[in-house]
Length: 388
Image 1 (cartoon, helix red, strand yellow):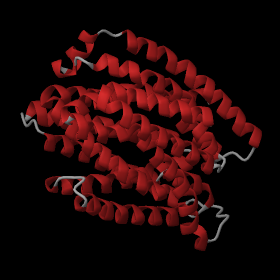
Image 2 (cartoon, rainbow, N blue to C red):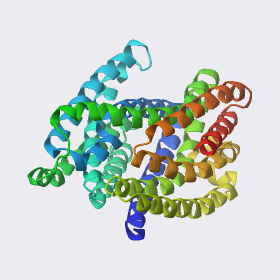
Image 3 (cartoon, rainbow, N blue to C red):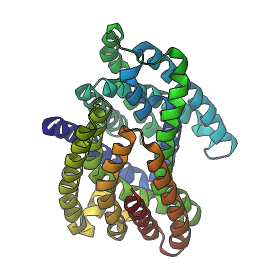
Image 4 (cartoon, rainbow, N blue to C red):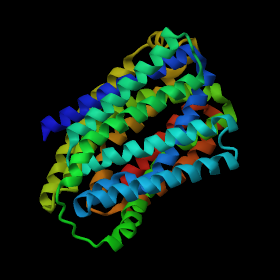
């Protein structure tokens, strides 16, 4: 178990490191306002991805051992494509995106959905190494494309950044096909009839994604508050603080990825509990030292990395630090309930967190700005953790 967890952690450390480098480059070259615009685009892609996740996320992983591989693949990708078209059009209709960003959002969400389907299927077959390789390929493609356009061709713009993300979704998707095609020939002991497949996708997928959507609201609702009340420049600064915090979250996310893959392939109730308890200890012991190191870094370190626009990062990071520690426990417990089919507990916890986030965000962001958003996030996760 430990070796597989370490492999996943190393993979996510690498990919998060690349993502962090992307944040540094785009922040320095484009400034805090453009960084805010990129953050909004990535947020919209994430929202579409969450809705697509009903058919291509954890639910697909959960159902992989139980259904025909071919049927799962077809249904997952067809619904992902449909949702990508409908949601992108909807976002344009309600003016959540600018008209010249419509094509970017549509194509990016299409390839993101296809890649997520492939990775979830591989995870459902316990092909954790293949899953990790795709993450690494995605990151290398992203940084390689961005560096080429920025520093070889000298084309520095927000649009070029979007093209880099497109390359990072599409290339690993096509590579994933080489691992997926052999799996179609394997005999799968399907325990359920075909007629129940769509029903189970909605049953498990909707519950799981409703939980994930609620979690997205918990740490992204403040994005919209900051943009409306403080502007894109302030949002750009806060998004960088979130990116730094997410660099630490990779520990609990990596452990949870392995934990969930084992849970859905294990029938023994006691073994499920043992895996979860070990995961909890590993998550906390790995997260806490990283938080301490982060909080000891001086302001000069952050201005050197991101530029003078980001000289107020430390107070925001302090306000987010408690949330990061809380997530080291919360993520593991959340995945345990998902893995044993008790998604309703996670959903209720997330809804409680949503109410907390909205109330505390509305009260704190107008007064304290990004620091208030960090405090609101920490309060929200504290309440959810206590509930779970």
